[in-house]
Length: 159
Image (cartoon, rainbow, N blue to C red; front, side, top):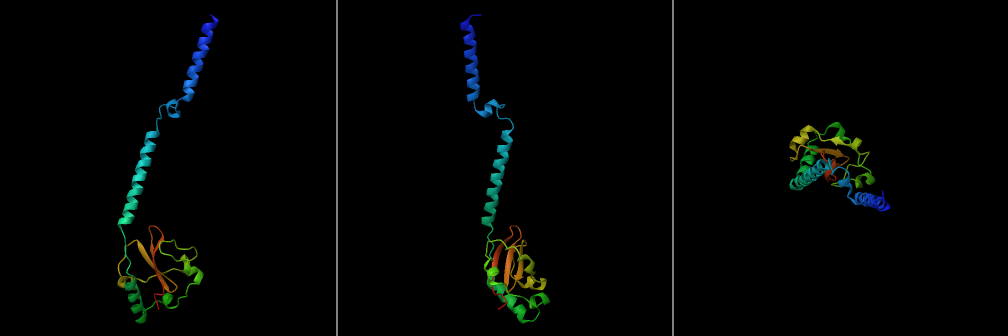
């Protein structure tokens, strides 16, 4: 074999090696097999998230604050308070300041929640079934159980 043909083979081998090293990683790894399903799943997930956001924006629920206050005060004046509500403690100012609409229920306040009694729930204005109402001190809060967020905080509902 001549030296020229040996150099030609080495040169052609270097050209092939350099061409393969410059190829995109997907082309070198079996034409990207198996990645198409992951991309489809990502697109489907993004589509579902957009649909959820549209549903949340489309479903605006208004809580009748004045109606709640009126019914609760009438209920209290009638003297039909259950024992847990008749003896209620006001929240400390620092904890009360943490109650914000759209925010999460602060930790440590969950044990102070008093569910609204059934006879009073029947009289109160309607809210969706996934909203739950609680007394916390002198305040009434409405919690969205799907998101665990405070929907409404009605301050001094008993006064």
